[in-house]
Image (tube, rainbow, N blue to C red; front, side):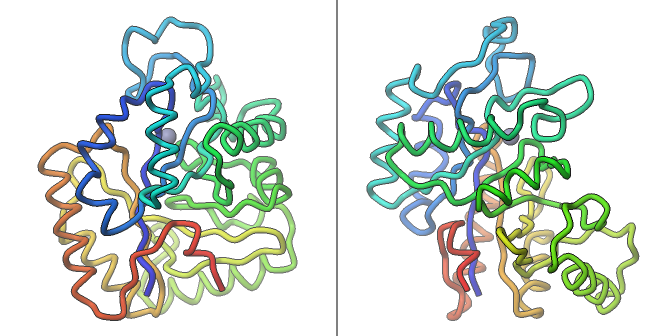
Length: 271
Ligand SMILES: [Zn+2]
């Protein structure tokens, strides 16, 4: 069983010391999959410091040299791997970036090339801002050959580009819902990788203020019983001491199973 850890929203606005404070005793045990925003927009948002709320522009990662050099070091040492998290992470009047941006194909391509060049690594995984991805967004991500890590992705076939694998995947989820006594309205993080023609997708369990160890344990135990994998997703900027306690307790619990392997998020998609 593979267990991976994902952290969203590293961007120009990130103080590398903050990542250090949250993960310095974690990333030697499990690599952290950092979902990084290439050109983060300054706008009123919880993840953006207030002094940038009226900036009216986007900030390329390189405008924060200490962060760039810290990330390069961490990548080189295998402490982190890098995923793409949108392009600007901005919101539009009618949705989040990868639902509503008019030019999302070019945002995807420019962002991927930018991160690969600046951080000297390859990008294999896309994490949509707010876990929101339109049909067009998914088409673009799939065409780029990137795998998708989300949280609770909609599997309504009408919401996805047509793919020969869509009906089979839809059926697997339907059966899983039935077997676990869930209705369509019940929350589900499907514990298996869903493979499509050009990409694969997996949902992550969220670790946010209020999440308890017991909730994570329940999700993990269910995935384990189903022969699946487990991805945990959080935001460094909301990890305080109690939440860090939940994270460490969960990792200790997962590590107590001899067949559990802590892997980089990219490896969740290995066959
Ligand atoms: Zn985000």
